[in-house]
Image 1 (cartoon, rainbow, N blue to C red):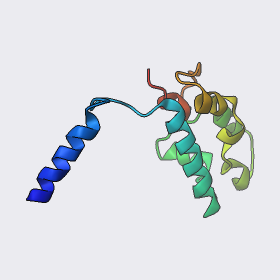
Image 2 (image 1 turned 30 degrees about the horizontal axis):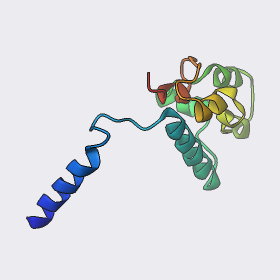
Image 3 (image 1 turned 90 degrees about the vertical axis):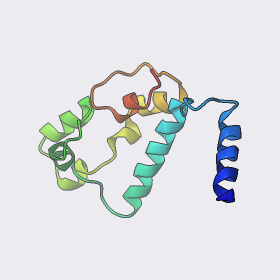
Image 4 (image 1 turned 180 degrees about the horizontal axis):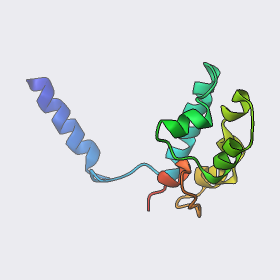
Amino acid sequence: MADDLDFKRLASVAEAPYGPERKAPAWLKSRTYTALVQRQQESGPLLSLTGSKQNGRKLCVFEELVQIVPAGARTESAFFCKVCHARLLAEHIENAPIWWPGCPYVRFQNR
């Protein structure tokens, strides 16, 4: 019981300078996402673009183009964000000027 009170007190002190509604910066969310996907690739191939779309994930403009082109499973499982300029913008600029539907980095922007 005493531990619960201590943790509540710690939480209130920790939130005080920033407020409970403070969000992580968009560039940090973007870099974290990139790192997580790259880490996931180390354990095996990513889900194909076709599989991602069938599971309800929206594809960005560039992923849609790759999915339309007849490509092998290895190509469809690549991490296309690695070479996309939207990723670079999102990882270095807060409120980056990117608006493509389906781009995961657009969702991380604090707008």
